[in-house]
Image (spheres, helix red, strand yellow):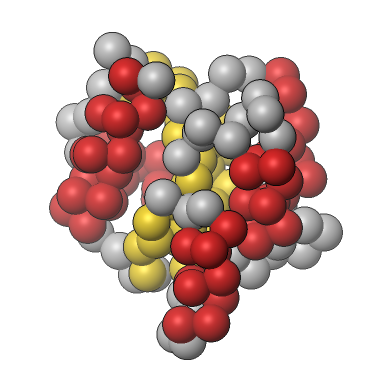
Length: 129
């Protein structure tokens, strides 16, 4: 079954790289939506069904942690897995993301194999829901 994915990052270049990497994984992906920050991501989720979210932590307006908290607080979206993509070296924000309900995280820079490995089980579980 194909999945719809939302990529959230304030860098258009990183969003494009993530889209390319997602396509390279060979995973069954129907549509990849984009958003530049957490607020925009919530708008996308209101307009489109999303099976998985990949989001940066550090963004303007609404950062990845605020976005994650909003998703997990929503009955409509709380089952959607959210994977954090981060340059954060420290464990503080990463552990906060896990406490908020993140399905996992990948550190930048990343490879297609790292993304595929992280997402394989997550997408299979999400599609079964």
